[in-house]
Length: 273
Image (cartoon, rainbow, N blue to C red; front, side, top):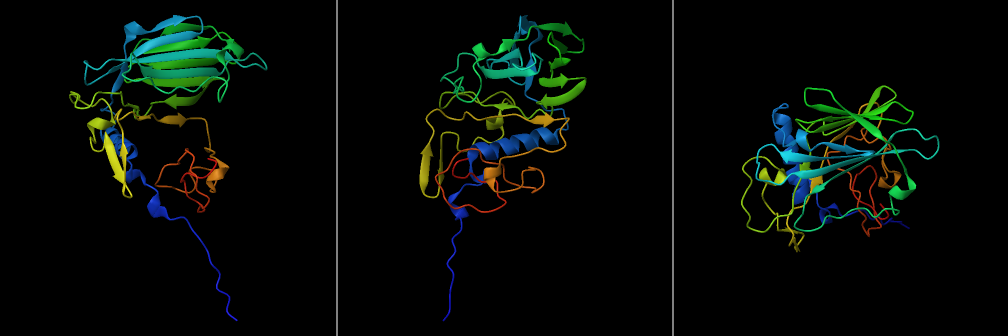
């Protein structure tokens, strides 16, 4: 008798790669353009005159460097103390359009993040460091501070005398505003659609067409964990918890799929992700 085992595997042709998905492809091209400039190309800066502090909350406007006609983005930073020891270290950051053409999705408080009414505000003081930097110092124990760099826009988060995290330190921030179909192109580099303008309103894959009546709306930013030795991922991706060790060329997918098959050591989306 001969026993022939039957095995099944994921049909990868049914899943788009980054190159086949317009928002992912154009963001990679945007990153490559910024990287190739070796620091001379960036799209965002903070308007120094717009920086205002009230108690535990800071607001400012982020301008487009290459097109003054584009409305600035609204930046909010809010500071809180932890509920255990009353130490500093909780900062909530929000960047959004001012008067967007369509409302942006925001996490509902209480579902994933703690409601702000249940947090303890941490009043901060603001100092101008000169050279286009603003420092925010916590009043709670823990030696926490945030440095807001104006041009280009960057944020440094420090605690206990150490730099822990840097946002937009590599200037990869991309914020695609809602726009009307047929609107004029930007005067310079504003977002990733200025690098790759294909498939902004409709794209096709596997015989199916995806209509996007609101147009492009992708966002992206680089986050550097300066004090971290490793970056740990999610176990349900069936790969190493150390995100850097596999050396993936495809990004991790964090959206959910109704697919029961999965392969080992891949960053693709899974059931329950």
